Length: 228
Length: 281
Image (cartoon, rainbow over all chains, first blue to last red; front, side, top):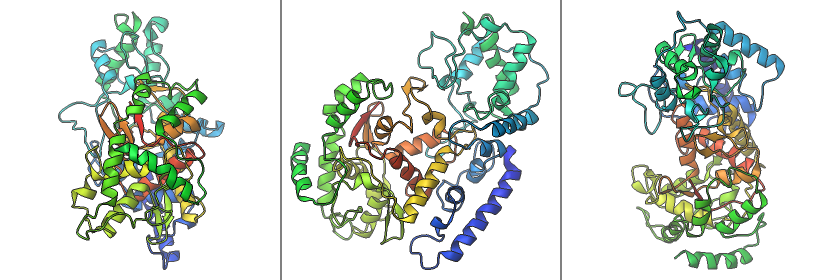
């Protein structure tokens, strides 16, 4: 995706160095062209992704190919540890996230009904044996996979916190709207290395500004079932 | 019928001298013991219906079909798979499935189960990738799933114990762990996004935790009949589905990245009894 070009170039260079080095010591190896036991686990993981034909050669919905999709940006790299980040990493990730955030032109709430549909939709960006076709259907927000919004709706996940009564408890003033927009856009500003995706990070935009306004309405509008 | 296979196994186990962690057990017995020993696991206890169905697991029908296929002379070479070495010697299937992936001298690399099966079908029987026998990987009607279910069943109740003695086995397991935690793709997910916590749900599904052995052995105990899909599915099918939902690029079967992930998966279940075949939601 658009965000990753600088890192992509670096990783590609790294991967080809690793492969060349592997070949030099792999003379006589029957099965592979690189001595994988000579690599660090990190080097081997990158080698397996980029140099072993392990992924389908497909164009991605956002543009770019499989390798662009699999190339990490700085934040993804920083958050690839087991468990929570240490204090230093957390601080760096928050700084990265704040640096890439762009405030919207306005913070008006959209239509909560459309927000509910987007929160429920898991369509979009899936590639491989079946490909999501964005010309047929807009990508959704996947929110129900991890969050409870409306206790009347069954099958909502618990990986993220429940958002029931979110607006009822906080109101829908400008400070709250700004915060909600920041969290949907790039939650790492407040929750470094959270599992939640970045929906509007710099040039990357999984949801349009209008779609985000609908989801904000679903959370904050006093009429929304989230708050009733 | 599969009862025949069940009766034959204890005899084979008694004769086979190789050390094996755990004895063969009926998959339903393995599951019942797991449930009794872990009464607080929301993951293990999420579907009473599936637990009830387990003695009549539709995957057991594939055991018999797979056994016939394994011994039949097939392919351009008119050969059976009795000469296939899954790591315990040609045709030795008891305990083989829970000790994969492993390094194979004849190919000079680490292979996972399905990759090894396909290797044998090509080398011994002469099938090519264009033949549906090896090309069709998914669905209860596929040769691959019948053979997989039969062969895996010979390791039911035994503990996951993938070897790490060869440097490449250790390297693939360690790289697989890196891949498991590697954030990436369109939505920044890694495998731990769903499998790093205990008792969390994606929608209505309670997710297994990679650090909780009794949950993780059920998580990686494929082949399993998936009630919601009415088909027996493999480890490869689970990986493909997860990676697709994670919005990474499409991962290929028999590929080194896929094998590394399985190396880490099966190592994370080490010491826990395998449920083969299992039944899942």
